[in-house]
Image (cartoon, rainbow, N blue to C red; front, side, top):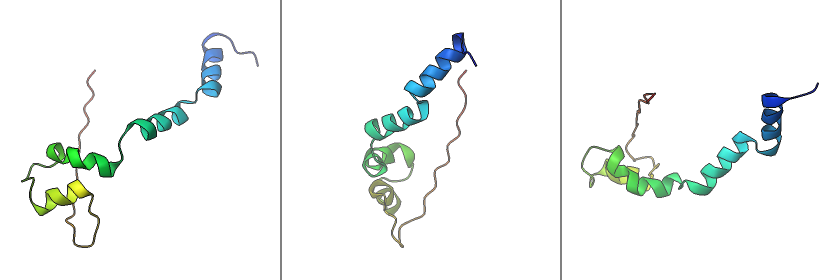
Length: 80
């Protein structure tokens, strides 16, 4: 089957630069690990006092048996 135009360009890009692999590599190389990021994200993720047990557990990514259970729900709204 002969590919021309947009179909040809799409096939070339799929073979030469696969989007899934490329995006995963960019995430791994450029985003901090959750353990590093929680140290500065706790200020925006948690509305309670930043010196209590819950804030400390979020900041240190504490997953021990006695750590408080925390859940964060985010609503994503399209902008366009």
